[in-house]
Image 1 (cartoon, helix red, strand yellow):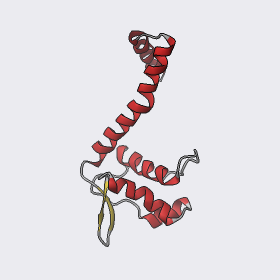
Image 2: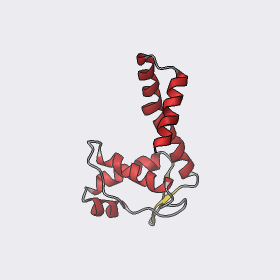
Image 3: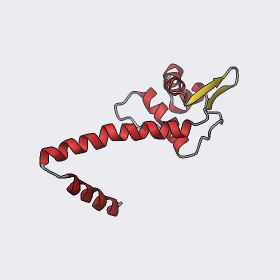
Image 4: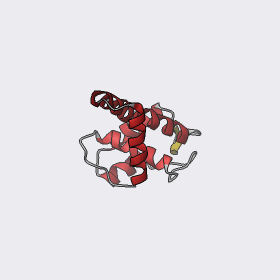
Length: 123
């Protein structure tokens, strides 16, 4: 587990995003068990209720499910769900904002595409 980043976002959101990152990157696979809320709480030195809130977000989204008496597990198809969710967030947070700013500056779609290609060459 990675340390949390104190970026002003609620800790429970950061917990759920870390689990999502682990699913996307294959560190936690479908049908495998995720750490318990008590393990998250101990590792991050947070209240177990805060950890549970982050985990429950993922349960509500169908990314995790509970096996009574055993723990939380990654649902089948969770990786695809998380990737699709993140793509939509990326579109809303970055693409729409970028296009809006480009229009204000008089940047055409073609110029914007060229800028993206140029940026891609740098990374």
